[in-house]
Amino acid sequence: MRRKTDWTPYVFLIAPLALYTIFMIFPTVYSFFISLHNWDGLSGVREFIGLDNYVEVLTEDEIFKVSIANNVRWAILSEIIPIVLGLVMAFVFNSKMKGFGFYRSAIFFPSVLSISTIGLIWRWLYDPNLGLLPEIVRIVTGGRVSFNWFANPEHTIYYLIIAGSWAYSGLCMILFMGGIKSVPEGTIEAAYLDGATRMQRIFYVILPQMKNSINIVLTFTLINSFKVFDLIYVMTAGGPGRMTNVMATWSYYSIFRYYEYGPGSAMSIIMAIILVVGSLIINKIVRMQKN
Image (cartoon, rainbow, N blue to C red; front, side):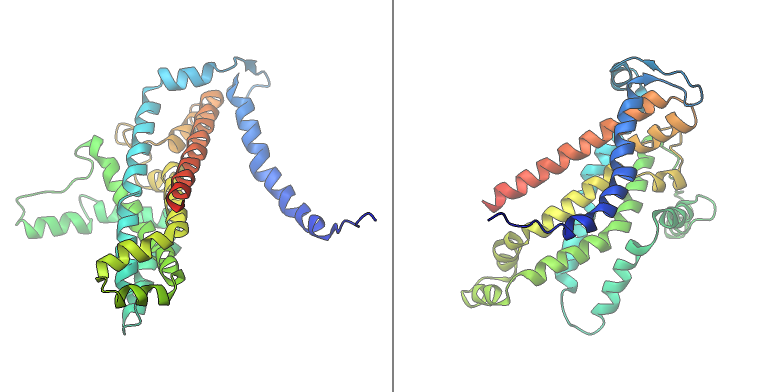
């Protein structure tokens, strides 16, 4: 006898799939369509030029090359600073000791703030005239050393990365703490009874069983490192000298400031491809480690 199909789950999926199609799939497909044309976004005439926008962006656009380099720097340091800090703090504060709950909440608090708010906070901290950090440097050095984060435009991107790492370290800590909690207590106690030191229990017992949490954190930080936009837009707007642009900001400026919809859309598609490939590589590495 033929089994009757229960359509109830599919009915409930109609609304989310419709929203996903409208706000995710359609804009992506339309961006790819625009990237194949020469269009200023205002006229009704679009000239089909194939992959010329991609060739132009990758070979002739010097600012886009700077943007890619900044994204790579951001991705590498974001895979190191917040992850290492989050992992260390997860082990340190994964305890029921009195007062640790407050510290965990304080460290996690920046993660609930909007990135724009974080950008405003750090722009004030870095401000050469009124900022807290320049004032601390002046007091500590007796006025012999001054701090100006715009003094060397090539290094300004690293100050932005520090601000971004501060924002995400607390979230990494919470995710790692969840991974630590998932490790069976019996396994840790067995290793302790076998004479394993604390560091041996961490590296040989706990971390190998946290692969899922590590995979989530690595993928999360990678995606955010390439999607970063509002922090840079608020703090530097891509300056000084356009040296702090990343792919997202330069794509935005190309489209909405210079009305180059084709190249700007091509940048967004290139960024999406990099994110997909990077996520697949991370997942593949984690799966290999599991096996």
